[in-house]
Length: 72
Image 1: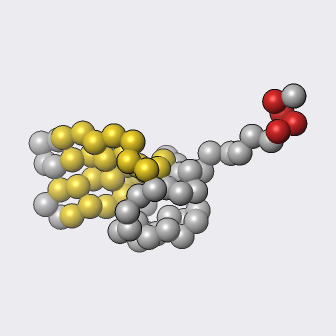
Image 2 (image 1 turned 90 degrees about the vertical axis):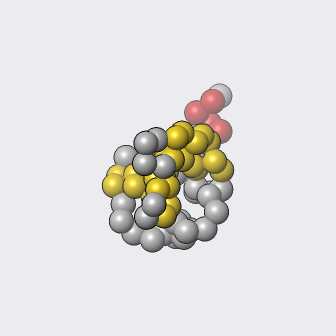
């Protein structure tokens, strides 16, 4: 996973402050919450929500699409 300080997904340009495509899980921490999300492009993101707000602190590359010929 790649650490990020940007304000948009480097893979598709979706703004980090916008609603995530899919929320996968939420976990309470001593300082706030950790939220795992998936961007519309498929990138897995870890967001931290605390007194400073919400921010993406880590993200993966989008999953590689599998070709239909690979499953034959």
